[in-house]
Structure formats: structure tokens, C-alpha cells
Amino acid sequence: MSDVSLWTALADPHRRAIVALLLERPRPVGEIVQACGLSQPSTSKHLKVLREAGLVRVRQDAQRRVYALDPGPIAELDAWLDPYRGLWNRSLDALGRRLDETADDSHSPPPPKD
Image (cartoon, rainbow, N blue to C red; front, side, top):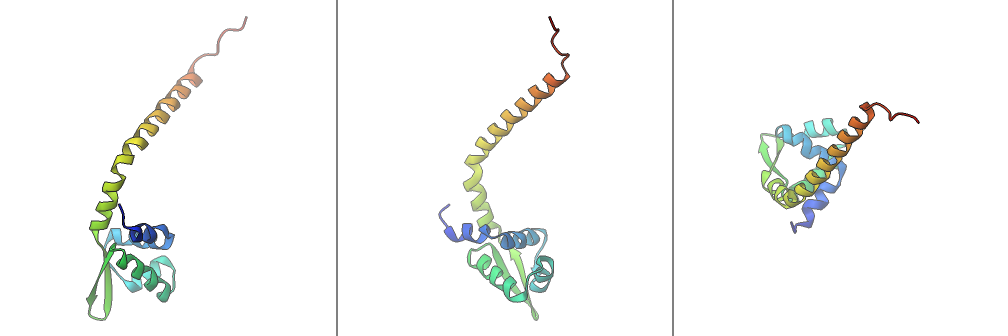
């Protein structure tokens, strides 16, 4: 993954919220403004960054601009993250084993006192 603009676009929490909204379905700008609680100009700036990073597409529907996710960059990001999943899974498996051991120890009777 070499596209810095993708990382920059996703670094902002407002833009991640917009991406999450668009994951559900394409939306006109007015809906995005309402759902995010941002001003129209601020939302438009965030959408421009997402569009320039290739994360969203826009189409004109009469007087409305409707935004939708472009799955290409997300797939590229997913492919880049794939090697790290093994590391996370191993760590989570080890944590799960440790928690199981701790749970087993808490249900064991206490050792006898001398």
C-alpha cells in the first residue's frame, strides 16, 4: 500500500464516519450532513478528500449529489492488512488460552493448608 492519500483520508474520524454511513448504502449529501452533525461546507470538504483518495464516487441525481463507496481502495487496504491478520490472530489465540487457564485456576479448590 503506497497511496498516502488513502491513509490520510481514513485518519480523520469524521471521514471514517462518512465511510461507515456509505457502507450501508449510497446517500445524498444532505443525509450525510444530518447523520454526521457537521455543517454542509465541512461535510463537502470531507467528501472531497474521500473522493480524491478514490474511496467514494459521486453521481448527479437531478439536483442532488449522491455518494457511494468505491470498493477498490478498500480491497487494496484489505490486501495490505492481510499479512498482519496472522499476527493478530496468534496474539488473540494466546490471550484466549491465557484467559481459559485463569478461568480454570479460579474454579479449582484452594490447595490444602499445612
